[in-house]
Length: 470
Image (spheres, rainbow, N blue to C red):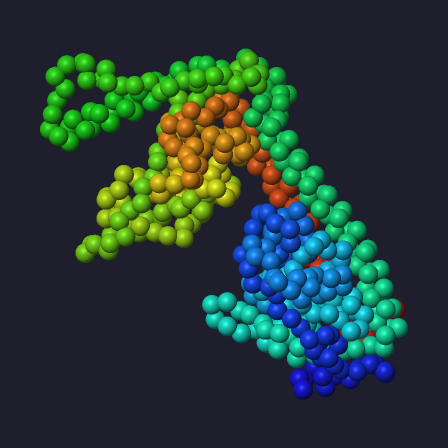
């Protein structure tokens, strides 16, 4: 017997095992899942959220000949034996369904909710931790689950304990619901602040107070385009010099191509000093590349290398992977300075359309775009926040059949509300301040979620120690 069994229980309580207080546990039906059919197939993934959504539970490709053997009934408890090992669920009002092979069914012989709450308790999870096995995938089988010790109270006391647990849990759950609503309100507030920022509403009073002092976006655009051309010409002359050539005449710079303007100006009306432009008009867009993985004789200095998974609405302060000087020279990617905005271009998950800002010098892979400014005064923070606000729309710009993706041309064509330089900085500062407050509040809410769960675990520990007054 385990050490837990040696613990003295209240009078009339006794130690037992899950195998003794339940009918013989049973493994589920083995078949593939289908989106159509007549009999649901309940899987581990369908119970891990703590609430079964029968609209998303698939159907059996092949139904068992003996449906009643595997049919789920009201009051059954299913436990996951792989993946989310040990997670349990008490079945109530099920639709016509059977349970999959990675679930084990228990039919309690005592109060079913008493057993169910025990399977949520710290004592149970400690036992699961001791009995888990396997290397690639932890798993618990029916034999191991049957051996788990459970303290059994008299039947009437079981009912009182369950009632007390549910009473206390109801108060905690009410608090959790309030926390969820508060977090949703913060999320909505974040979006409303972003919207106000990129439409000029956030800085309306500031703009009025500085009326006549701001360089209009139209003039700023002219300066940026002039700087863009100047940069191109300087690069061309450097290339001539590297080849030992001298331009024969002044026509060499006629090859310069102005960036494409917006094909269609958005209907959103901007302040008089603002202007809709294409990102490619006011920023330089680069697409990365994957360096050679072959280790050269000269390994060279390590360089930060950004992968698409690291572009996740954040400031990038370090990278999981590094490349070398030699590896960099074998690709078309370049090292970008701090302040560069990164944009995820590929991925059906959340990656495509997410942005980040470099706090370090770094190169990047072909699944990301790097967006650099032409003038030091330009605020890439403002661009970063704009892309955050435009996330869903940016994702829709992706094309392709198998995996939708952005490309350099699509990124360059994204519409951008160009504000005066000073106003860009003010907007970025205000958003940083407001987001810092929102983040602190969200972190506080998350701490309260953790505290609520600890309170529940404390209640369950007390309940199965016999110290919960019912």
